[in-house]
Length: 147
Image (cartoon, rainbow, N blue to C red; front, side):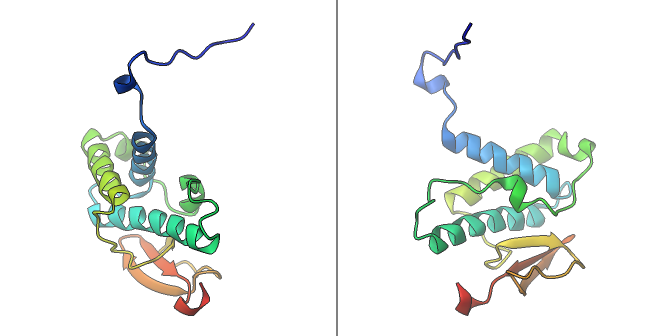
């Protein structure tokens, strides 16, 4: 027996890829940025998009449509308690931050970083230059001459 997936009849009821991407980024921000730390969330969003742009550049656009998994980007970062992630106001703020970042309207407080680690951790081998330290995270990039 096969199961059929019922799609909404009207296109306006379908969830766009852009909305899914925004929601995924917002969920990652709510999971890793401390509640109310807008600057940290903005820096994490910028880091995720910088990583995507870096991958596009390194692979000459071959994987331009492929979005790097957010969990792999944020795998080493601290997770916030469930109570923080369940806060409706913080989730709404994270959705706005994600939407601005994906639209290219947000600032880059991470200053070009494509890697974030908990503050005090060693610099990643592939990204030895620290660009910023915001909240509980340090942000790193590669040497400008290597990539």
